[in-house]
Length: 409
Image 1 (cartoon, rainbow, N blue to C red):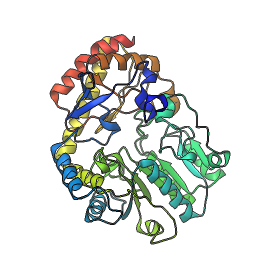
Image 2 (spheres, rainbow, N blue to C red):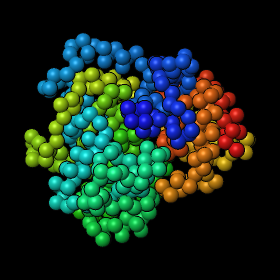
Image 3 (cartoon, rainbow, N blue to C red):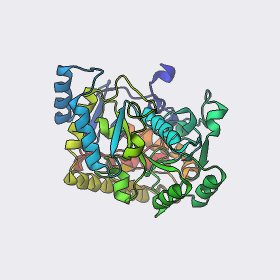
Image 4 (tube, rainbow, N blue to C red):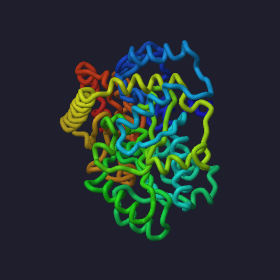
């Protein structure tokens, strides 16, 4: 395997160590092949909002597998999952499933171009929308971690159709829209691939207004935030409805599943209802659908309240320990998401994220792993607290954080 892994951020090269190979997970903990246990804040990079091997999710997947793993034909479960998304996600009138967030992002952009007759797309520096050729410009996540500015193999024509603007930069958005009106403004409403960098007050509403005025579609990439930060994702919390939404992670409950959803008039352009072609042999796979339905069934208002309490306690606890030790960090958080930025001041865009002390984060992360806590092995990724994290896990984390922050100095 290139680099010994099947996805770059797993390699742990940016924090100066070899990767941990996992044997099993249960609840909020992982156990590696050497028998060491860790409090896990990666949680498969977001899908496991209920924790590892939740019994109801495991039971649903086991029952589905016993009936057959794939059919290449429609199933009742796909309809049930689409109905659940429609009931929870304010802007989702229709939905098409895929097997990955990358596929969903690619398909949403294709649909936006078909609907508007335009080629250009506006995206934000530090946002990662999967490894779609035209969307890798100034991408965050693993590209930021490994210092890759774009990617060999992406043609100049594909890159030329992407206009990159700094996050939270209203003037930059206006310039981009006036210079070349795009098919879509594509954003993570709560960016979490340069670390968690929430939008400035009113910025999402500004994007909604400007997209309508320019004849562009507003596309929210809620692969991370969807069903994690709230029942209806960031769009419910912020009261801003996009034209299209990209979903992933939680919708599959830990199995490969994603989707794009939106207004009926747009989604009916997708084949076979319309002529915008997109297909997938394993789209709506019955095992992934079962895991997604079982996970969503666990996410009621009390679950989100508990997740918010856990995340707040963790974020404020980490910030307090850092102050006591003398480490300069910023810890922004939202329900189910946080980042420990090694920065003197607030992080409001990708430039500020890149200016963080990544060597200090690496030392902190290595020490946390040595003390039995598994944070994201990258300054540019979010932590994912889950419903399985309890007070004992928080205590273990904050106890480990004291020497870990000390190691970063």
